[in-house]
Image 1: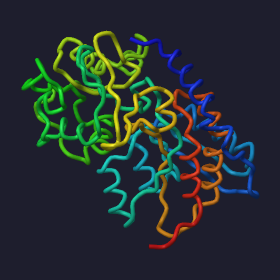
Image 2 (image 1 turned 180 degrees about the vertical axis):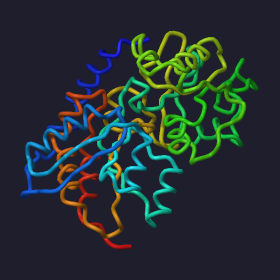
Image 3 (image 1 turned 90 degrees about the vertical axis):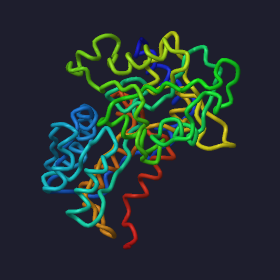
Length: 344
């Protein structure tokens, strides 16, 4: 198992070397006086970070009553649906069921603002998905299209020779390992890597929790038993392939590079490639909100999001959380959402 602080140090160098974030982001400056309320309700995984952002907001706008309830990811959409909250911090992507319930009530989907990258190592902080094989496997890379055909229920790739391997690999079935649904990691993989297709039923599944508390699961260098089990299984089977977080890399396995499409160079899941988004299966964290098509953002909501997407806000990501700051290109895309959108 890795020593997690070393990963965060590597990531700090990756960001510093590429100037991917704070130095090229806008500094926050208040735009006029505000009043009223601002209430956040959502995941407890992000509470240290959202409280840090709220500290900046309160100093800039002391007349606003700014509060937070960090009661868990399953409170984000109840808070938005009832109007009890204006922003919902969520360390995973909203599920199809959550989006459907919101859309049914309001007639339009929720707005999602990306606010950080996931972590490099920690299961509970939305790490990227990395594909692992046995260390003796000669395969070096895959495209997302190949990955989809490997994992999907009706996928066309079932044996190693279909990926170009020869000799002892010809005709040998690919033994798949993964996480049991429902959980955010597997759901993200389905959406981002498989176009929502069902997983192959022969996949060896491990639960995302083994019945212990999150703190107990992380007791040994941050390990979560599901990823430990998956990589242990791959290390013992030359013909296995599965997914886990990069921070759980161990002896006996290796990570594959991924390409978004054929003809595009594959990228290994290094800190630098994750920071620059060259690696394709990177995850984000979000602030969800209720915004009708064509409507302007509530002033308090807009100002809070300006803080989050500023150099100060992204500095706090690096200083106060296990998450990673957003690349400047993503910040620009999210800032563009804060203006008044065109009516449909």
